[in-house]
Structure formats: structure tokens, C-alpha cells
Length: 61
Image 1 (cartoon, rainbow, N blue to C red):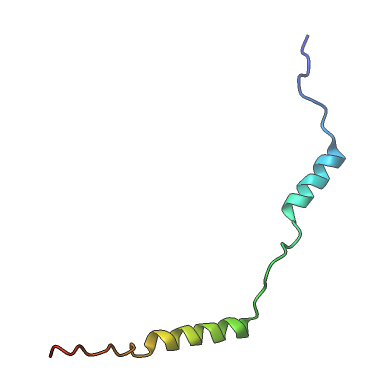
Image 2 (cartoon, rainbow, N blue to C red; image 1 turned 120 degrees about the horizontal axis):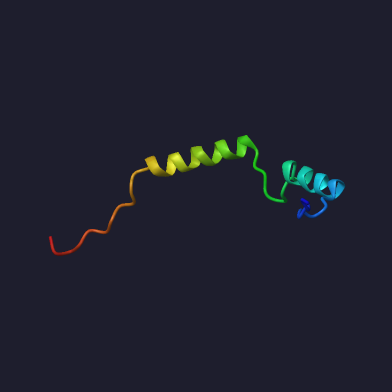
């Protein structure tokens, strides 16, 4: 005689859990506008392309 050793599955609870994992709610966070990101990229590029700050000249020369 074969006995079934698997636990009974709660299909309704399991289905809702799977649906929750497949389509999670959007996380709370900071969402940035593409214009803000573009401005930040331009600012970063301008800072990287700007000349370095002049160093003070030593009095030994």
C-alpha cells in the first residue's frame, strides 16, 4: 500500500503568496526625473573638465 507523505497544499494561500512575489509593490524610495539626472551628469562633466586649482608657489625658487 502506498501512502502519500506530502502535506496538503493550501492553494488559495499559496496562490496569493506567489502573486505577491511576482508583482511586488513598488518600494518606497526616491525617484529621479530624467532632467535632474541629465543636469547632474552635465555638472559632473563640467567639474571633471575644469582645470585644476592652482597650487601656491614655493618661495625656494
